[in-house]
Length: 122
Ligand code: HEC
Image 1 (cartoon, rainbow, N blue to C red):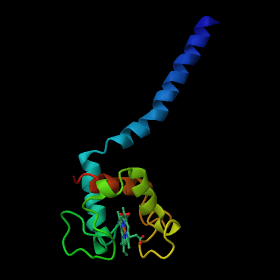
Image 2: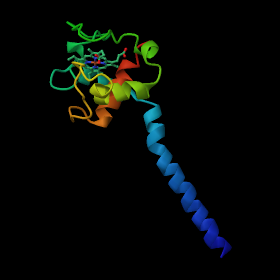
Image 3: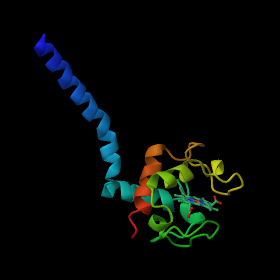
């Protein structure tokens, strides 16, 4: 009986650990995430963020949106940037910025990569 309870506790602990892993992985973006995010931001067929935003390393940026060089200061919480990139019209119905997540232009993983890239600038 006691052994059985111990066994259940071990399974519970393991399940708790497993449910934490994606969050831990998200907390620490890798160099590969940053490189993928750079590509998304600067590629016309992906995010094409450079069409509207000044972003470090990008050439011929547009100026329809705010300069994202100091995004860490503008939006200290990455989850706020995520919400904006996922569906900015929810916040500003008249925005020219496409709802990248809502309209499946980018996957949630790609949005996290572009955020990893933008927040890699000091
Ligand atoms: C067609 C133009 C356009 C494109 C493309 C675009 N944005 Fe925007 N973005 C804007 C505008 C305009 C704003 C200013 C707020 C508003 O009107 O929604 C903005 C705001 C933002 C903000 C909030 C900045 C702040 O200081 O509040 C972030 C972050 C952002 N964009 C990231 C991105 C990323 C990442 C991409 C590419 C995946 C992207 N944008 C593509 C036009 C664009």
